Image (cartoon, rainbow, N blue to C red; front, top):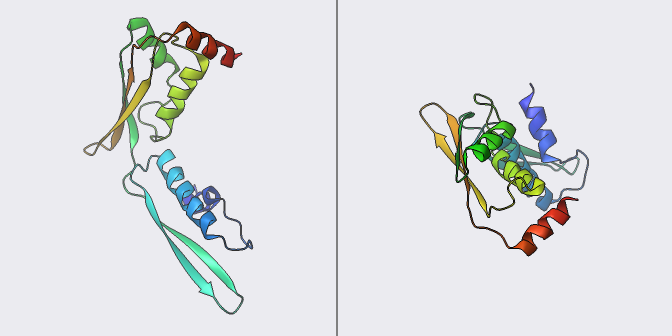
Length: 161
């Protein structure tokens, strides 16, 4: 695939627009996120501006340092019984060996909370551990058993409707 083209698309900058340095910075952050969603966990970039006086235009160049490419390793689930552990593993959508998406653990937790999968649990944490030796990323999901009030439980249920 054409990664340069994908990076340009991720920046959301459009050719021919008036230069806005804030948009260039936001574009750079989007480029870095794009790379991290595709397994490049340590990706970074710099911005170079080529000013062309002749036609009063500026070329924006994102120089991307991709770094190593990480795949998903293993999922560890803490704080749930066997049934809960099994359910989390069943709906976890990131297969081992695929490019690790840095945004997936937070997305997954938000989805679980949104669907109210575990009503009696408090906060859930996701910790990502990068293994330099085999270039894998392992995720540990920790479910905290801090029961929520009946009012909060009702509020969560009404939000799901």
